[in-house]
Image (tube, rainbow, N blue to C red; front, side):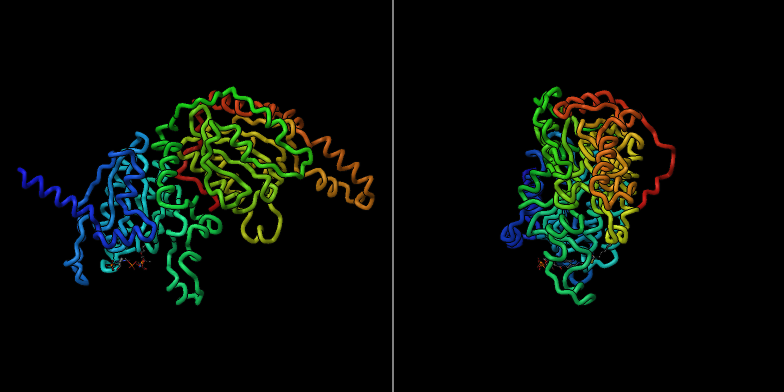
Length: 510
Ligand code: HXC
């Protein structure tokens, strides 16, 4: 018996060493943790149970039959994060550069199948060199089956990808089909083809960082939802994120204890809106003052900053926030902001997360760049997403709600459940100046006359009451009471039941 136990320990120790001490040291030297160290930080203490530790590849080409390493480049299993079950796979860069073989793919598939069957989230930690070159088409087949499982699980369980090293070739498309992608600054990069191929095909000279580093993907391409300073911070933030997310699309949102009273008034909000309607203010101040304990997990903070998206809680229960940001481009909706908002709204709707929308939007951004770039279809994505969403939707118009953007931003007309306005709200087809200049073109040469026309339009529409008279706004509320009003609305909507007409799936303007 003793020998059997010793043999087990020996085999475990061998597997845990992955590609060997020298490669582990090299990993550390680059500022990266190993796959198992990462999992230890991500999961609750001693909760991780590893599967398939002894799996080896079956490749016999290029001398591979002589190089077998237990685990085959990926650590898989399950554990808990703050007590809730989560499945995880972590690429082990010390073993064949974390590259994907057929056996490696099967390990990931097993975990994907278990996560879906047991309706629990799955997190993938990426640090890998793509398809195992020695395996050829077997690796491609493995990727295909992983991708398929990503698609089938989409909208059923949260799928999170964390890029913690190279992520190239076949490795990029699994993350791309998950709900969120996070990166580590300076040590991670993601691209379909690397700098060498780019040089050959397009003759561009770029570094890996310039081509697919965290800065590029959080600010330019919007592939990544956020980037953190190092492995430790990233993994701790993933634990924080998981506390906001439901386990699956039917579980309901998690409920955490909170000491923040639902009744809490915030008098400083009464003076948040500047007297000058063209002066910006920071919408994040409103968000932080309204949500539980000022705890806001922002998604895509560095991209399309004219719209703010992220998770928070009200009375301990997760909500999604979508808010125009007057500090950036006056909060206008452009193509990027529309896409960003739409994707976030759809995530919330998939997972039954109520959506709170703060509106201060002067309209859609005019110009050839936007029109040529497909603003019509991108704007339609946000309109489509809000319209199809059946989760509780509470909207607060703080200032401008002009034009089509008024309709788009979770208005009553597209099934906003409770639509509030602050007394400072202006709900109109456009701003008073623009409106008067179109309606009274003949008066343009006379500054006194046009000023009077602007004032006339302002008096008529630069308030919430014209909309409230029609029932487009349910109530005009005091800014200080915004938290209390939202909490009450969410409680009232707790058992909301709305079903869209049966369809195979919709045809959102992609
Ligand atoms: C097999 C690989 C590998 C791979 C790396 N290794 N990538 N082994 N298949 N794809 C091995 C290396 O041989 C090396 O082994 C170890 O991993 C570490 O790699 P290094 O090159 O020494 O590390 P580094 O300098 O940090 O460079 C990392 C890297 C580079 C940028 C990821 O290894 C690289 O460019 N790899 C190839 C990337 C690639 O082209 N992949 C195929 C993409 S095609 P030793 O034994 O020396 O430690 C693809 C198509 C799928 O994925 C499409 C599906 C849709």
